[in-house]
Amino acid sequence: MDTRARIRVVVVDDSALVRGLLAEIINRQSDMQCVGVAADPLAARELIRAVNPDVITLDVEMPRMDGIDFLSKLMRLRPMPVVMVSTLTERGAEVTLRALELGAVDFVAKPRIGVAEGLQRLADDITDKIRIAARAQVRRLAGATPAEPGSKAAAPVGLAPMGRLSTEKLIFIGASTGGTEATKAVLMELPADSPAILITQHMPPGFTTSYAKRLDSLCQIRVKEASDGERLLPGHAYLAPGGFHLSVERSGANYVARVRDGEAVNRHKPSVEVLFESAARVVGPNALAVMLTGMGADGAQAMRVMRDAGSYNICQDEATCVVFGMPREAIARGAAHDVLPLARIATALAARLKSTAGGTIHRI
Image 1 (cartoon, one colour):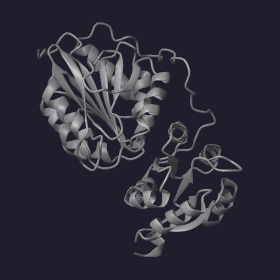
Image 2 (spheres, rainbow, N blue to C red; image 1 turned 135 degrees about the vertical axis):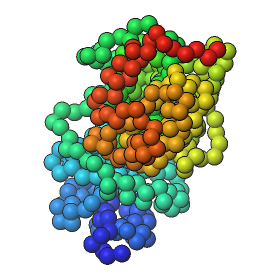
Image 3 (tube, one colour; image 1 turned 30 degrees about the vertical axis):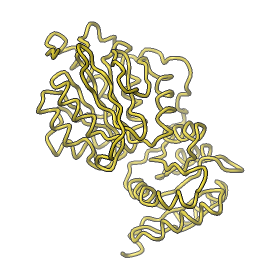
């Protein structure tokens, strides 16, 4: 491949071992090269000016200036695709979520022990995420900082309570790259009396617990990781735990969550395909589905099956996606009733639910 066509990557990490390993992994690829390494953000700042990379890999915690402070400045002044390198700890998960809020495209979770072997096992994941980041839509960070977790958010302007809706209705959301922020944007708009929501976000074990807690602190609805066999209640959102598939089943008059281990589907666990297939089979015309930003085609075919079973489906539009892959594939399969910008999705869900409130189809 012509060198000029390669993805140019700068690696920023305070560990010389990690810098060397990441550079080696990157340089093994025919379509990318490591054009520089830096041990801290201050050195990285000068390197970025000198080599103008396409993608940066950035350690979360470093000396002199931590990765979050550096990322915040970078995304305000010189926005570019960033893949965070995080540790598999609760602190690492929380900081990573903050990085995604600030505009990082994605993250890689490095092991706490056996780093060399662990990073080599993750080589395909690392390079895939660099490729995705190189094509992602990156936006300049506004001056305002993202909201911090705390008390429940104030009721969103413009979305009144749903009113009396049948407990038969369920909302299903699938997302991948860029989806942590997109899902948050949808959920924060929904009032506390929304139907139960099931979410599959491509995310590894160790991060979904912190993500659910963060969403719960920001939303009117309650948000938690799904537990196997629990009843799905209105006003609650249930997130697929990292490393497990989430689906819906019927138990008498109730819907329940099913959380299962198993083989990866479309290379993912959790997989949107698994969730959406169960929605088509169990919920049928009482389902509403949303496909948000993400790379690949996970869930696209099952979303078409949901439409054939009578569901109402929304895909996020290209202009507001970080990566348009999953919505594009669903649209191409004829799965979408509506293709909408992110800011209009919650309103469209509410309008659809209210318009069909009297026409619920019961399957008991």
